[in-house]
Image 1 (cartoon, rainbow, N blue to C red):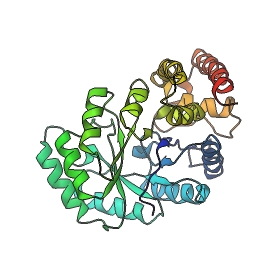
Image 2: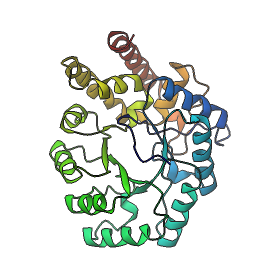
Image 3: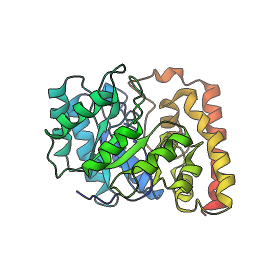
Image 4: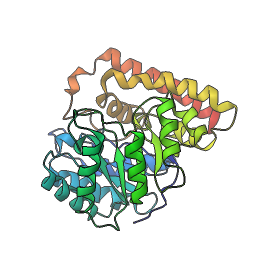
Length: 306
C-alpha cells in the first residue's frame, strides 16, 4: 500500500447495475478506464456515490477488489464501505476492506459517534477502532452526509493528524474558513485534504488543499484534473466559475443523471439503474438539462485541454 497519495482529482465512483439490479462488473471496468483516461489521480470506490448503504458487504468487498484489479496500478484506489452502527461489525468491515488490496481504507466520520455525542467521545471511539486495525494500513476519513454529516473539528483533525495513520480527508464542510482552519491543523503531517465542494475548490487549492474528490468527477473529470494542476493560473478563475454553476446538476437527480450522462454522452455501457432512486424519476426535461450541460462542458474541454 502506498502512503504518498497524489494531489489532484479523485472521483467518487458510481456503481453500475444491470437491468435486473445486480452489480455490473464489465461496466465497472469500462467506468474505471474512463476515469483514468480523463487524467484522475486516484479512485474512491465504495463511497456514498457508489450507493454503499444499499450494497451487501460481499458486494462492497468485491467492488473494491475488482476496482483494484481494473486500475492495475495506474492510479491508487481507496475504499470505504464502513456502514455499520456496531463497533465489532465496523472493525470487521474495515479489516475485510483492507484485504482487498486498496491503497487506503476510509473511515466514515458519522459512524464513530452519535450526532449528539461530543468530539471527545468520537476521538475515544476512533482510538478504539484503530487498535483493531493493522497499523501498517493507511487510513483516511470521509465526512459522509448520510445519515448525518459529522464535520471534523480542529480538535479532531489535530488528534487524527498526530496518530500518523491518516492520509486522506474527503472534506464536505463547504466552508472555506473551516477548510483553511483544517489545513492549518494538518500542516506538516501525513493528512491531506481533498475538497468535495466545487464552489470553494479553487480557493482551497490556493490555500493548500491537495485536490478534489466529488460528485462532478462523474460528469467532466478532465476539467477538474486541469483545475487541480493549474489553480495558480488566471484562467482557473473562469473555469472555476463554470464548474461551480455546472455542479448544481448534482441537486437535480443524482446519481441517476450521472449514469445517464455516462451512457448517453460518454458512450459507456452503463444503465440508469440505481438502488437509491427510481430511474423513472429522470424526466425528459432532466435529460435535456444533462445534455445541455454536456455541450457546455465539451466547449470548456476544447478550450482548456484539447
